[in-house]
Length: 170
Image 1 (cartoon, rainbow, N blue to C red):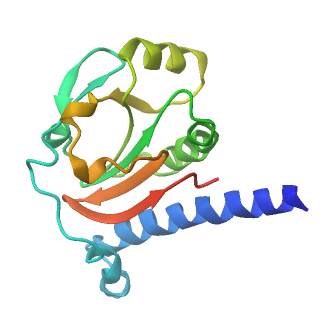
Image 2 (cartoon, rainbow, N blue to C red):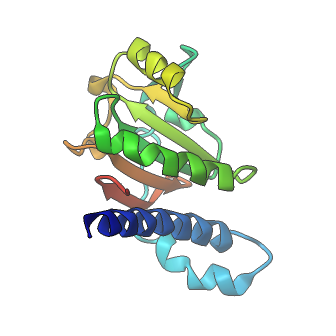
């Protein structure tokens, strides 16, 4: 029975993320006004995030530093995680699958850890995920993104939070 519950929980979480991302993409599609109106509730869920809040610096696994403001995609799927976090790692295949399904869309998948960059590089080399991993220093991360627990996922559209979830989606 617990296996069925786990499968149902995984599918429900994954479908929720897909629904939200598709609704966002439909909402801002210039060709279908009906879908744009029906998903407007997603756009206005939360207040915007200031440019200052997105000015924190991240470093990718190629040791390139940039700020979150440097990402130009309309939609950013940001997941806060750690190499030691079982639930974080368990949801990565779903995130990777979602990224593959949305390839070619203006969406950036950003997975952020607060660990040492070398540890994250080693993790990426061991795993077969085609995801963009970054690290951030705790002191530079704005309070808005400090939840005290991981995994934490937030989806931004033009600096507005349209979805956030604390805990695993699997």
